[in-house]
Image (cartoon, rainbow, N blue to C red; front, top):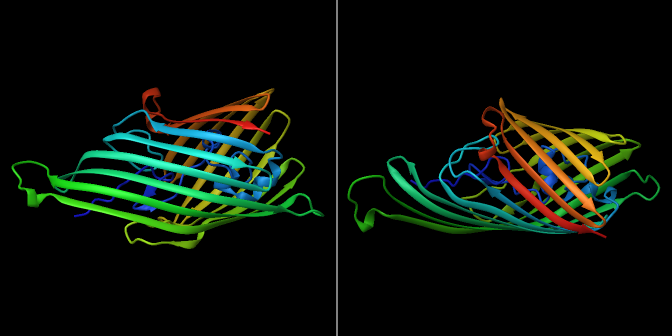
Amino acid sequence: MFLTFFLVVGFFFERPGYFGMPTSAYSLGCGGTGTALTDDPVFYNPAMLPFSYYSSVLVSYYGVRDKDSACTGFGEYSAYDGKYVNSVLISSPQTAFYWRILEADRTDTAYSGRKTSALLRADEAGLSFAIRDADLSSFSVGGTIKYFHASYREISYPDSGQFAEDSLIFRAFPAHGFFVDAGLAIVISHFAMGVSAKNFAGKVFDDEITVPSSYRAGISMSMKYASAAYDFEYSEKDWSVIHHYCIQAFYGPAKASTGYVEKDGAKLFSFGTTFARDRYIVSAACWGQTDDFKADRLDYYFSIGARF
């Protein structure tokens, strides 16, 4: 029986759907409240691009510190030899281009009396654009056109005892597709509101992988030294509702955030920080489940870049 390759729920492949991965470490520290924020508009809401007011180049890296079942967000994984995401983002207040690479190994995973080793690699590239109304300057619309490609290799063999060569099962397949995101945003004084649809149009040309749609609505309020945000997300992956909350604090070149995510009773905390010196930016984030929040069981994400 073919074993579906499970990755962190909400970020990668899900039973077996692909959701992608944010291109900014700091946005993960905000608990996924990106619909009405400018921390990662190409992932959450491209209509927020015009409100970033600067151009930037950002390179990010994501990794897992614990091979065993640990910080999973809303699911569970185990026995990873390695998992990483590299991403590059080039953005301006009107357009943005990104490229993400995800690769993960899974070794000797027991399932129905057999063990499985698997290797997954996924590439995603997208072009985002936004238009801000010249008369009603606080309103904007945006969209993202993206291409997705994945390759998967898996070998399965009996869990115990002697087995012949014909008892080995090898599976491999490529998958690719095109998808579209869209969003609306409005900013009035200290308040921002946004709605977005992710993967609402498009097709993946392989039956083994799906790319579920998700829909978001969010609001944020910012003051001089702090801000708060909330996102309501509805996912077609399992017809579920996800609540995202975030509080941020600013002081000089430093910014810090704490986020909270809740879905079907499962809870996740996240922390993020960013430091900007002249035009250079460094960001970091970590997150873990609230019932097992330990330093050696946190996922982490780093970004480094420059503003122009």
